[in-house]
Length: 111
Image (cartoon, rainbow, N blue to C red; front, side):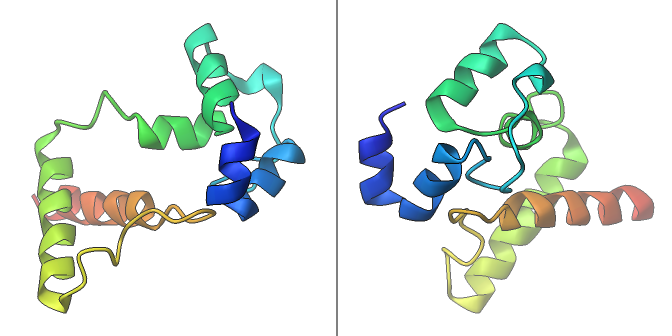
């Protein structure tokens, strides 16, 4: 991980990483939490904890029909509001993932 680049682009995230915290959720990093060597390598690249990695790289559910519907709903909301970046992930925010999980849960209850 090139912390100097991160410091310039995302100073808040860099401070969290230097304190051994996840740059997205601010959780204290426990190196024993990583489920495999690939997850540990991703931590070394991005500083993300296992939970944020699981949300960011949710390979198992990414193609699930209800998740795809949720993504379309969020994209339509952003388009309607005239702000394509309203749900963009920002340092320390997992807004998109949280909203995607909520909308997916609602869709699963109504389907």
